[in-house]
Image (cartoon, rainbow, N blue to C red):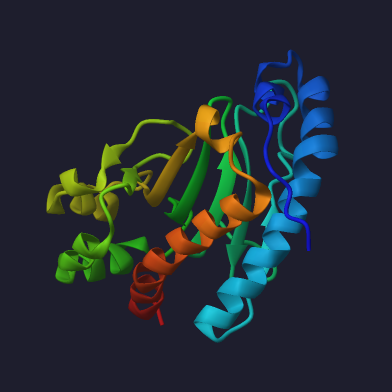
Length: 206
């Protein structure tokens, strides 16, 4: 299968004015790439995890005025949705591509996951130095993985809206230079490192 690559046009989508214009560009140019990439990644993760995984592509359906400033695909073990479950993401802002393992605020049992991470915080040290941490999936702010503290995870546990996303940013200048297969290899290698964290999170709420 030929893997699509992301171009400057894809990133420039987020500079288009107006909800309709931006959504049309997302639907026509980005979502078909997400579908191809997502099918490959869903099969890959299902094989690695030993259970069925499901692809979800962000629809931005609730938006009526403000155009989205990012878009993504998500992969979870639930067919109906992903926000209430630990999930993997690939997506775009205007200046970067992101690869995440995401635990977002909709998780009903994120306290249990956070406590398991606190109990085994050394697991984060197994990630290579190019990983980053974000505490809000709607913003670009992040910290290097080696700056993560137990206080960060305690906040994820104790603050209702706090989130925990572990992954990588690939900035536009680099992302547009990657072939589709190079990008796929990078995403899979990233997911391989994130799978133990995913499994630990799932174990906490089993």
